[in-house]
Image (cartoon, rainbow, N blue to C red; front, top):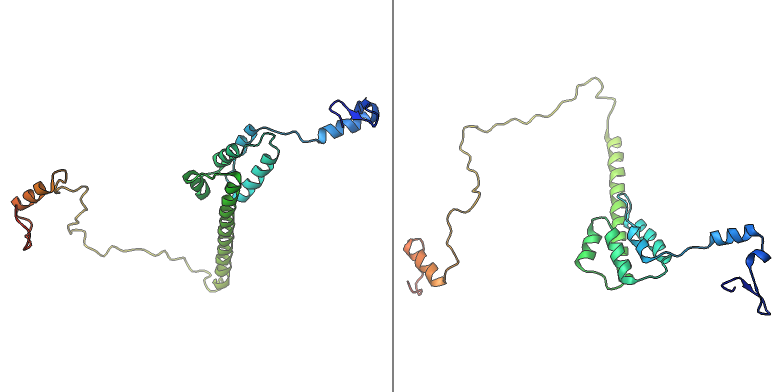
Length: 199
């Protein structure tokens, strides 16, 4: 196919509309994919309820359609499109050196996310199943539900010592060590060990 039409064996160029019906040409041009630019990747964002794996699929589909693909730009766009979480924190802490490394790290977090969601779902189903299993609806009919109350058995008149909000006595350490020892000696607080020389 030539850029202006179809090239035959003799080198003549024919416009597609002269060979094919217009409906075929219109359908063919409509079905061709238009390539996008790197700026399009910045618009791909992870939705609130979207998993990391689903976001990766959408981002990879968008990245395949990019005409002038740049790894550094793709890494930045992927990181900026993520919701805050463990993966975004990890990518911010240590940026991946290539798009392949980004996808490998994201795959690890996606697998962990899938496991976490499956455990949460199984825990919820076990909890709902166990409550049905052990409930006895027949015996408690007509009884009023009792609300447990917590009684205060301690005396209210005792003195409660609150923790100090700041240290009110301390040795300033902005002086030389000899000066600190001298201040401590003057206050008569320390007991000097034998072998240490008093200032």
